[in-house]
Length: 67
Image (cartoon, rainbow, N blue to C red; front, top):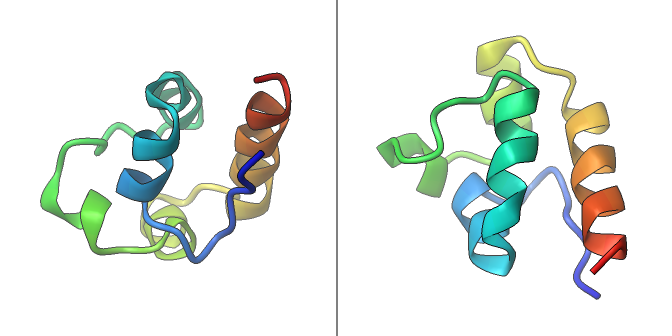
């Protein structure tokens, strides 16, 4: 099982599992297809969008553990 970290990009995580898109969206991160999704880390993108990166990563990892 792969583990999501804050230094990964959104694109990295989506490539691991497309179903994670709903988790990003549920946290208010709608920029899944924007160019920054492949260049910024989850931590940076979360900061820009005012999202709790630790909570987002925890939810992503909880999803990955179910796979």
